[in-house]
Image 1 (cartoon, rainbow, N blue to C red):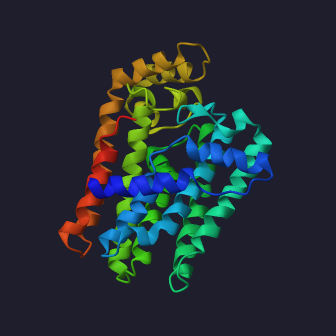
Image 2: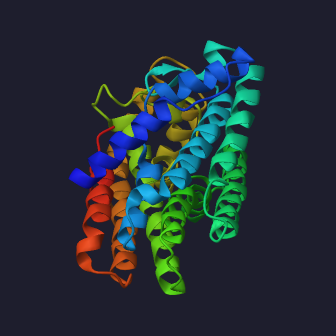
Length: 322
């Protein structure tokens, strides 16, 4: 874990002190604020570790890692607007602290800055890096649209949900890892495919874990409103699995609770999840995708010693409590 901690220290310092222009203040102050309120820095850490995995110092991929983190934060700013979320990382969201128009424009500026810093990479690998991030960018938008469409749909199946989180969340983890491999000079197509799929499968498992933590975390460090997915009527693995497991009477009860806006809505829905053991099914599904990721890692042809840091980080993601 020493290597991971060192990379995260470097990333935290660079991200919190990222230099934006001083003016216009209402464009750039929200970005300085948002980048300084914390975050796990998971995605950029993956980029540095992937570069290390393929035999180069992780710091060589720092510009790509920063690009991934700036892009990720752009998606969060816009996602918070669409979800009308009051909190992110335990602090006011940008649209709450300023306003929606400022949040939209600041997010757009962060998107362009992500590509600006990406272009500081060597010209030999830049086209492949841009292709990887733009493909992920398009798919993240597709996943976000699916997520919004699901809110008004009564026909969402678990396989639809898995595809949505693959696009909305997981492809960016895959891209983060693949970009680190590209910077390292890796050209073996099988290795590039497996490191990308490793990230995608970790990402799906990560999101299912996030669904569980949204309701069941006991950590004060979670930084978001507990039960926020229920309040927003989001289609999560827990909700969809509950509908799949429920008899007709329980489905009607679940329908009734999800259409209410009473103060006890979260607890009532949680009681139904507990009755149906939905949390246990979510844990099994998470482990299914985690095991797929581990198989991807086995298929990457590098020394096992190089894999340790990435495997340690992925294990930490699967057992996190916030």
